[in-house]
Amino acid sequence: MVAGLEKNSLIVVALGGNAFMRKGESFDAQWRNVRIAAETIASLVEQGYRVVVTHGNGPQVGIILEWVQRAGKESSRGITLDVADAMTQGWLGYMLQQAIGNALEERGLERRVVAVVSQSLVSKDDPAWREPTKPIGPFYSKEEAEKLAIEYGWVFKPDPRGGYRRVVPSPKPLSIVEARTVRMLVDNGYVVIAVGGGGIPVVRSNHWIQGVEAVVDKDYASAVLAREIDADVLAILTDVEGAYVDYGRPSQKLIKCMTPHKARELLEKGEFPKGSMGPKVEAGAMFVEHSKNGFSLIAMLERAREALEGLTGTRIMSDCEGQDILFF
Ligand code: ADP
Ligand code: MG
Image (spheres, rainbow, N blue to C red):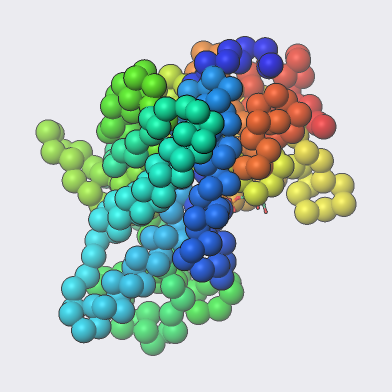
């Protein structure tokens, strides 16, 4: 067991959206991927940890928009992005809730697991509104994109892989509306699935909150939730062993531990790109800066247990044995 990590520690486990539906995979393949995640979660619960699960929704929200758009050719009905986000929370929330429940029961544990429709509060003044950056949905030809831009007011950008994709703003989450509900459920022994797809973005004016057209980053939303429910660990699980310096080069080294300060220095140097490892490292640093004794972990989904024991994965901690960075 790791210093500072009690067996009943509260862990927020963030799962990558791509892990559920890899490029070119069929709809059914999702169940297999969800079951892998469910096994990992259930094994953590079996060890005594309390777990909150969050997940991405990039591929899924794209699919919903594509379906609606195809159907829309006949019915001329559209959909707003906040509602599409909500649909992905139901979709993946259902799959995870069932699969985690099955994996718990198989271990002789009670089926206490629930998905919560979650909203992320964002600011009307976020600079992200001025520059949409997050690509979602299918690829379009230039002509199709121009037509949709006029018809729906959508913004498109050319994709480096060819064609055009819709881009939407990705404002920073400030707070999770349902954080207290999540905490209450955890305190009652539930595994909770929350902030799916980074949460449905909402803005507040006085007593009203209202959905807006954006996609919140699930790594940032998970960090905010972890802070608000006073979690001990933010574990961001993905498809690599952890964060590397010199990633992809022969000199690459897997980071074992780094301080938030060091993490920000390496972010500045461009070691962790914006669309992938960057948000994980930044979210990890953010959580540690705001938490008393908590730490963040970036690790491979299949190796979460070993990572919690310190055998693999990258930790972000306020103290790495007196150093600001350690490597494996
Ligand atoms: P997720 O769907 O889990 O959010 P992402 O694709 O957004 O996953 O981020 C994980 C990816 O980040 C890895 O597959 C890896 O290719 C990439 N990556 C970029 N830079 C680094 C780095 N410095 N260290 C580790 N992985 C990196
Ligand atoms: Mg990602």
